[in-house]
Image 1 (cartoon, rainbow, N blue to C red):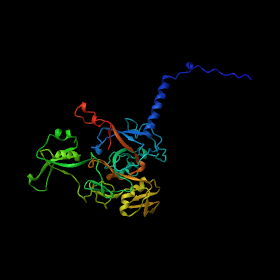
Image 2 (spheres, rainbow, N blue to C red):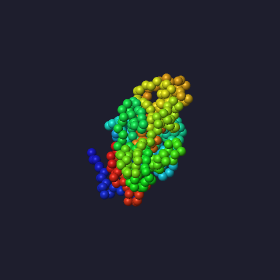
Image 3 (cartoon, one colour):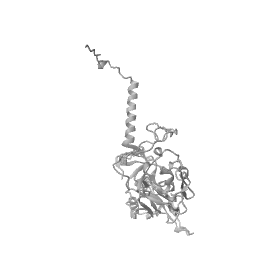
Image 4 (cartoon, helix red, strand yellow):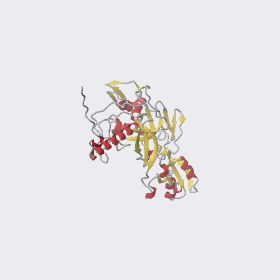
Length: 392
């Protein structure tokens, strides 16, 4: 039998790709690679607000590890690649919520721990919750779970913890927690005279300050005390105390029992404020709680909005499911309590509640670039001392 083999086409005679085809293949490869890295390994974020100062500054660019806690599968598949909520430079939504998939979390090599700086999706952008929090967070809009706004805070309590804030100090399970090294509090700095704000405050890294006169509810003007309200770290407070024109430095704290509006939960049963908050138990998967008046106030929104239950109604201090009142509830997932390191300038869990585990994005690892939004000069735009700084 005679078998005839077709001769191979010499490699130099193969049809070459057109420049447009090569460009398209290169772009497609880059987009797919970027998508996989962004989903599986790490994402880049920028700090837009001062809520984490002085640990993280406005203009810090971060790498956030998705490997630590395990990345999650997409919930909203109909989305323009490498976008979040809108198409770049526009207000046009970058996704369609016609299809919503169940979420799964891939294995990570650690769980969220107290003290971790965590990026998460803001829970209260849930369609049933966002209107309620528009006073504290005026730019809220409803989004699917995986496309809610990215927030970054420090985890101060994990699932099952009993948290309390006493005079600005966080206590967990009865023990005072170690404060972050660069955590900021608010202080009244009493001075003998107005100071050169550039030399005294800005050169020491204090950017949030204002003149203030403390009065003592009397008609004697000489009793008034002039000074400044500043937000700064405990280390810088000790430095301010050594200056000869500083008479005293005192923390500014809300009194215990003074009820602050807009705190979570919105209940007339609780008289809490940002400096004296709790005690409150963070929900834990498998934990069962009786649904009395206090627990309904604390956990009603969680049960209605984040536990993926059907037929739940939380209204008028009661929780019902398909019209039947619930007397107890067992949580389906873990939750966390997050606070900003800038304790008097942070919209955090004290104002909008717990962060569900399925909203966790990743752990902030290090700063790879830092740009000062208000530099003294062009040459000070880059904060060189912050580049490749590990986040603590």
